[in-house]
Image 1 (cartoon, rainbow, N blue to C red):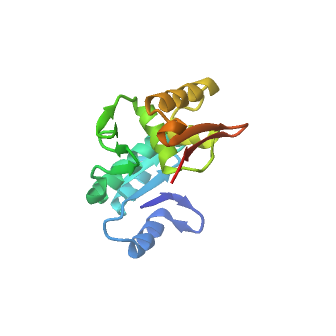
Image 2: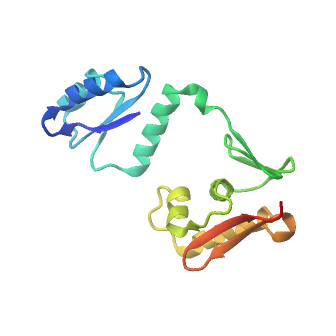
Image 3: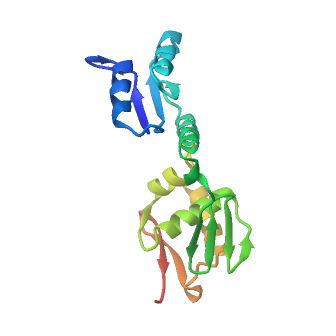
Length: 183
């Protein structure tokens, strides 16, 4: 996928897009960024072969949504439901379901995302900033206790305790780490 600014020095946007498309896969989506809502720029970009556009200043949530939509359309085979297995836990990415030993665990979407983040990073300390960025994507002001509460709920709902083979621990002045215990 190509995300490009329409206003580049020493060359116009359509020329940059044309050259880039020569090197890209035929179905690779492109999105361009414009500084204003000028209809002429938008028409020129779409006519040159861009799939979508965004007006600056960018809104993060909209950028993520548009990029995701373009990627889904361009690569449909990669959008099927994914099942990830971590010991007794199965994460079904679509529809966002979590199972333990085949039984559904009742979790919110945030708890699902948080748990999946920890399991994808077993043994790695994750900073509070990284967790915030990964789970609370659009929320810029998440109180510290909100994250702690969600982590506590994940720990309790999934029984992430030493006797069950996993331990979710705080990392002092940094964040959290999920540890797999035993062999």
